[in-house]
Image (cartoon, rainbow, N blue to C red):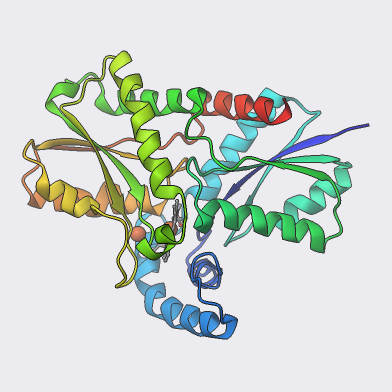
Length: 317
Ligand SMILES: C=CC1=C(C)c2cc3[nH]c(cc4nc(cc5[nH]c(cc1n2)c(C)c5CCC(=O)O)C(CCC(=O)O)=C4C)c(C)c3C=C
Ligand SMILES: [Fe+2]
Ligand SMILES: [Fe+2]
């Protein structure tokens, strides 16, 4: 008899301060992140970057209670989705750079006799650095472990109406009744090296299309912001990344009330709770902003659970 599993994939984040090194090393050892051909050179650069960044990254996670919140929130989302889909479907998650890695869920699926795996990377827009990396990793580990279930994967879901309804609700929640007309809205996306975009990664295009889809939905919801912008955060290293950066964007705004929505993340993490909510808050204060707000990610919002149910339904159709 057919037995299905839905597996949510994400990047992961350190579950304690010791795992910061593992996280960074695994990330920079990923050929989708550092794209040079030589594996030897990549490993060398990964070791150098990891030893340079570990201490400062540990300080960030220390401020968030000693770990990334990403796994804890994902567990809640998985539990809520399991309730919605019922016990006949196995629901689980796997991270790319930190435990729980793919192997753990694959062993569980094998033991449960799963015959069809539905992989949902929790990235609304496709990027080779995230979506491709997670899907490749999961399927390579399935192969290595001799697990031969059918696989159906989703590559992006920024155009899914049920997903976008969650975003509108998170924005409404962050506005808490304030007049949107007095605010600028910035959709802040994780940046990407320009070189990766120039090689054909569709991420920037997906972010732009996503914002274009959200604009009429915001108006229909009565959230008529003074203006709507896109900016890119979290640049790493000296190379050219997508622009404008969030800092450039904040500097350019004349109106001093802003709401930031983290459009490339589905689950809150250090880039939202620390970088946006603490670091950029300070930047905004220095720039004289009267109001600086950061909306929560979809996380385990009931509408996000509904959106995942809808995506699973579409994958089966
Ligand atoms: C150096 C290259 C990086 C690319 C390319 C990149 C793309 C990318 N990342 C996310 C989502 C997340 N990134 C997170 C942390 C993080 N990302 C990088 C580097 C790249 N990301 C680093 C070095 C770090 C660690 C933090 C730091 O030292 O600055 C996280 C946070 C996880 C957590 O621990 O809470 C997420 C999530 C996306 C969506 C993306 C491309 C679209
Ligand atoms: Fe990142
Ligand atoms: Fe960052």
